[in-house]
Length: 330
Image (cartoon, rainbow, N blue to C red; front, side, top):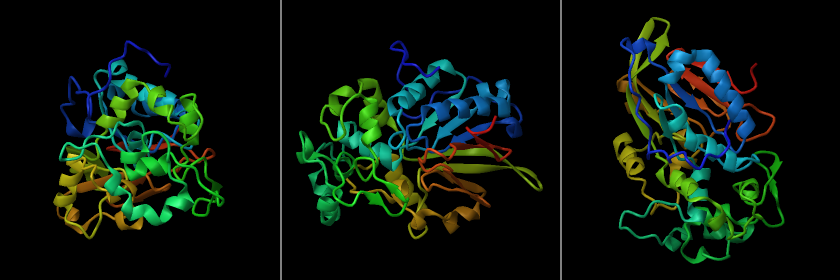
């Protein structure tokens, strides 16, 4: 399970379509999977636990939304992406959505898998300026291919200098500020080596290129104290900024505008923690990963219990029941 199969086709940009839908909306199953961060064995256990939790019939036709951050920190990024790429052929009646996280965008930038800018250009040196004051401390990548690389790719493939301690997480950086060294190693190359650009298979680059920045789904059933209701679901890796117009930001996310030096909806923290008030006018739920927390407050769902830390579980949430499932459960 999870071994690479060269005969498996690459997934479509967003998902594979289900062949049937339940007649009763409350019977519909939607699963949102939190950050995986290179932990293949955890992913396999979680997948098995999810199937047991919802039952084989509902599992076969479920919509499964992966909330992003598939690489870095854990040792098995290559195996994780192999597993994800195979899902549409192994579970043809499921629908699969693969969101882009900030780690995935940076990985894509380093290996040349970013979508082109809106003007069609694939040169991103103009994204460096905003972060320039951090270049020396973060040890940005300066090897082959760096001259037109997106700033997040240079940060991802760099090597942190003397202060290698991540004071926010209480851990030592693994190679770069993105903890990217295990990803390099999973493809058999040393950290910060340009050889990674050749070592990553084309199907993995396509996977990274095709990741969506937001997914919107109507008529998602949610169980409440007063029965079930149907909601609009918005899934985005980090969240939506409360101070920005929601539709304007959704347009940016739908277009995957890589001319931006950073995308707060993929990497923000407290500025994207809450659900924007305008989304409360109609039944809407906002689901994210990213934050290293499991947080559920009314219609805001943050599903990232591990934060990429080895001793913490990968979690997922099942709708309509709002059941939390972890890889650590037997």
